[in-house]
Each structure stands twice: as structure tokens, then as C-alpha cells.
Length: 314
Image (cartoon, rainbow, N blue to C red; front, side):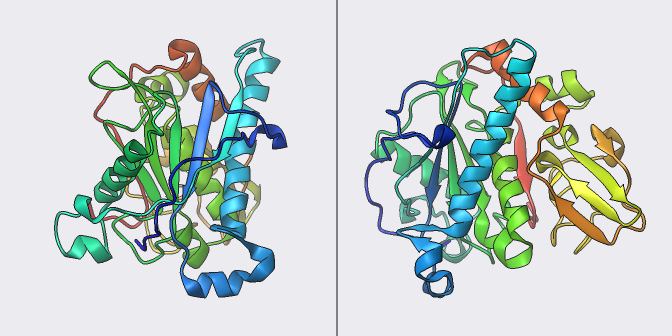
């Protein structure tokens, strides 16, 4: 992954609902950090598409996450639940990957997901940015890093809330915008940013209670809009097609997924067109709602889970 000189600190205003407000506690608190952007991408973006370290894909991914979390609260409030909860989605300062976390020379060029997350956490500690109740999303630009794939989370920092040691903890997750932009589409970029964020607000036991499976991906849907078109919701992205090159997303996720166990999957036989919607399934909204209801800003996470999406041999 390319690196950027790390400007210290984080943004001090909230992106929630388009307002600029002081950052405080929130049930759904997400901070998004870009990595460095290659010169080629900067030139392609031009003046209109690039503002500082934020390209149009970065901004649209952040807005997609914000919109998805608002959907959760809308779903919950329609059912008189989570009535006092808030969404806070904000920009963090750019992050570089510290070389001290690289275990072998090949990791400098193609770092593993574990290395990236370790480096990310080291940077957040240096900035004193860990709050104990925040999802930190690294929006990296590494289109050729097959070890990171489309992104992912790893225990023990895979869920917002109580960690395996019983102490309050933040969650760290990665969405590889460079991969989705190069190999897929802007719609997939938005969905995978949502996908990786929501992994940190759903534990396996909650997913099990909603869809009868501990796999978060089964909360998603793949709905036929016509005979040849399948519309994919965020949690099903990278898993809705056949486990082969170019079936849906260019690369299939390497986590668990069984189409028969999805909240809804209309089958991929004969599908020629793959559409991606940022509209969450009811199952996804219900799972996030239950997670927050059961734990507030804490989690009884199973502690051993891994969610890793796309192009990984690990």
C-alpha cells in the first residue's frame, strides 16, 4: 500500500446529516481515513474530483456509509427502537503505514491485511484517536494488493464494543477503494465501504438470531429485477455471484457465504447484469439494531471472527 506523510489529528466536526457539529458520543460513530493517492489518480481526478486527500470515490464512499447508518436508525425508529441513538460519520486525517509493522520485505510492497490493520492501529494510538466506541475505516488505495483484497476486519479489533479481554474497544476495518475502482465500479466502491463498516456493528450471535447463520454476509440480499438482472445489497456484495472470476464483482470474497442462507438470494443462473444498491436489507438493519440494543456501545463478540473480502489466498 502506498504511504502518505501522516498529518496528525482528526477532524473535529461531524458529517452526520450534513451538519458541522462538535464530535461527541454516538451509537453509530465512524471515522474514515484516506491513505495516499497515486499521482496518476490525482491527475485523472483533476480539480473537480480531488480536494486535498479526498477524491470523489472517497467522498462518495463516506456519504454511502453515512446514508447506510441513517437507514438503520430510520428502520429502528419506525419500530420505536434506538430512539436516542445518533449517527456520526466524520473525516479523519490521512494515514501512512508505518514500516515498523512490516514483518518481511515483501510486506513493504504487498502488505497483508493484518499488517495494514496493525499499522493503522499504531497510527491511531500515536494520535490518541481511540475512543473505545468508534469504527475506524481505512479507505486505502491499493488496487493490486491481493492480500488485502477488497478489505476486511480481524479480531481482536473487529467489533465496536467490548473486546476479548473485557475492555471497551474501537473497531478497525479496511475498504480498498483502489481495488473496487479499478476492477469494478463506483457502485461497488460504495457498497464495499458500507459492507466493511457494518461488519463492525454485527456479531456472529446477532446474525445467527436474525438469519439463522453466524455469517454476516447472509444478512444481504440478491434480488432479481428481471430475468437477467440481479440487484445486490451491501452485505451481499462480493458474495452474491458464483465463486469464480467476474461473477458479480470481479473477484469473489474469501469469507464464508452460502447462497441458500442469505436473507434472500434469487439465484445467479442466467444472470448477465449485476446491479448494486446502497439500500440495506431489513435483515441487515435488524441485525445492527439488535447489536446496539443488546450491547449499547459494547459487544459480547465471539472474539475469534474474521471478515475478509476479496482476492485473498489467506
